Length: 76
Image (cartoon, one colour):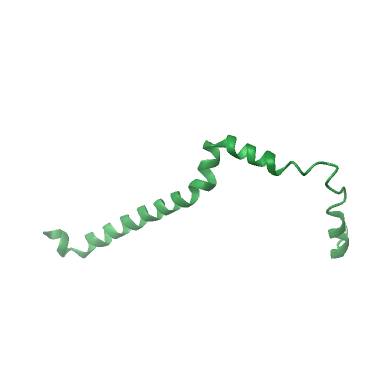
């Protein structure tokens, strides 16, 4: 019965639930970004190979970043 009368006990439980809830939300948010690619590396390797088929040395211009420095007025 002291559980209902002591407000500090409830605030302690709320704090524990808040920290546990925050940890659960962060786990749910970070799982597809950090953990899933490490566990299923083959799927991501296939996807990268498919997406990088266009980028070869013949398709990429040699002076891609050279024009940006000249337009900004900065010198090396």
